[in-house]
Length: 218
Image (cartoon, rainbow, N blue to C red; front, side, top):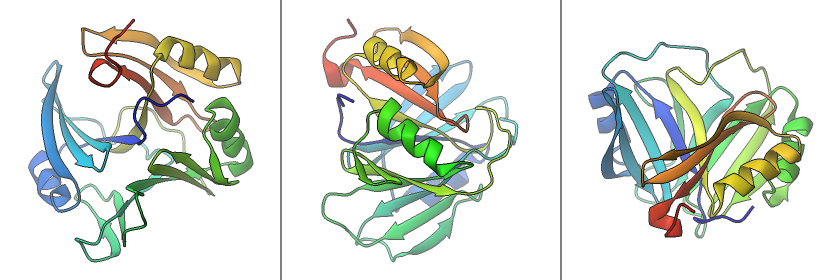
């Protein structure tokens, strides 16, 4: 995969905006507010080159079933290492710094071998081990466990984002290698060109061509 940004972004949804912003402040630097329309706002926070997207809407989001995105790890010496729960019970694992590594996303899989094949072959991500895949300074760590039947809408970690130079070509390549389509490539005005694919358990992965990174949406 030809990455336009060497880092993974992670998106969550909440109905407790103020509490969530207060919780995440020590771990992720507030960057900007992005208005998504329809009363929905995205509060973007930097973790190195990664973005934590805290999404909140005027109409409350249904609780929903948890996704396979089970925990987010950050690597920093500015906060004591440990396991923390945010106001929505999302797991945050704080580790001491490890070189340029900025975050890891832990994904619970119903069949870890099948998911490893998807992330390594369909997504084309380099593997540090059979169950550990790199997205620049970020990583995806797979572990076997129980995964329920969930939809994209819901509280908690709901999707991840990779930034690429050509969303149409990347989307088509993932589908050709066995990935499933969540949403066909769609332009968001003059800001970005995005699509969604699904991993074997139905976790949503946004493929994004953001003009501020690539210089063009063509």
